[in-house]
Image (cartoon, rainbow, N blue to C red; front, side):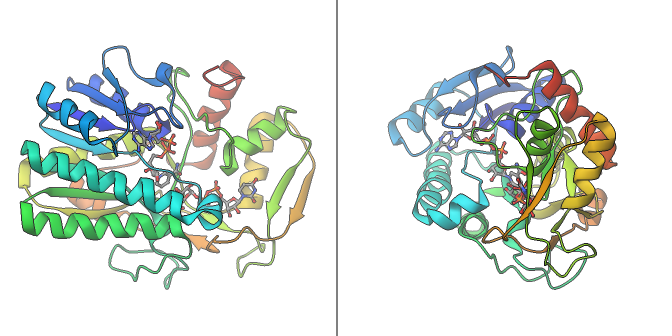
Length: 328
Ligand code: NAD
Ligand code: UFG
């Protein structure tokens, strides 16, 4: 297939591009490089540098290339920043995807796999979250992703655009080769920050809140390896082609780890100790997010392979050791 990957120079996008190429697909990447990296893009993919909100750029992209399906990662995704600056998030995440969908309708492309998030649930009503649970985001970032899911639902009915919305829980880890990995600037995600602290690049690790209603008071998250996420995208695309049916899927390992447990796991994997300090809660953080991925397993035939926290951390540590300055 000829697959357009929007945001394919970013963390999860670049891993998915590697997987698509491994499976023999032709890949076109569209990325503004606002948070992505040129060198993260696989050599066999064609990179078009531009913004989804630029109509001329999008029209050129679709008219100059044969595109069978789209995978869309392009968005801003920092929960804390979205609380400080919600308009930035609506502008890029909602309007950007809207422009992409308009270009697809114009070009007659009718399949899209979309990066949604566990943040659509907000404070969950059940310990293990099902796709059918209520969606009530506690931050603007989650709201923007939920808004796009709704746009997709109506675009399916009106224009026949078939979609898979993949609600990832916490993406982590790096490609097994050590060639690509997570390099956000500034980094806000827990696992890379802990690894940077273990490597002596930060004085101490700050834990945002230890008064949550959880086993040790710190937030619980379900960490899922980026290569397993990449694999789910291919499987979701294959299912769209096979069945022509839209769907929403959680993607996680189904196991929750507290911030303190993640800290201990990184200490164990790296053999390094470092200071930890408790700070106030970070606005917008739900206390616990754990996925049921039963639906993705049954309907997509997806099984996560990096299914322990240690395996996930080991690949992230390898990436940081091999690339201490990230892509620079
Ligand atoms: P990332 O910032 O590394 O990648 C996003 C990519 O999109 C970047 O390469 C960026 O340059 C590009 N981009 C952003 N806006 C663009 C625009 N308007 N036009 C063209 N390119 C644009 O982020 P990531 O961690 O790889 O996340 C990918 C997607 O997955 C995002 O949509 C994010 O919301 C979602 N997600 C991430 C996580 C996580 O834990 N990282 C969890 C759930 C969902
Ligand atoms: N945390 C700390 N200290 C830090 C960084 C993070 O205590 O220095 C805590 C956070 O407060 C949170 C947990 O670690 O409780 C995980 O935080 P991350 O920033 O790594 O991830 P989030 O859960 O906030 O968000 C991520 C993605 C979102 C996605 C969400 C789904 O960034 O796109 O996972 O669970 F929606």
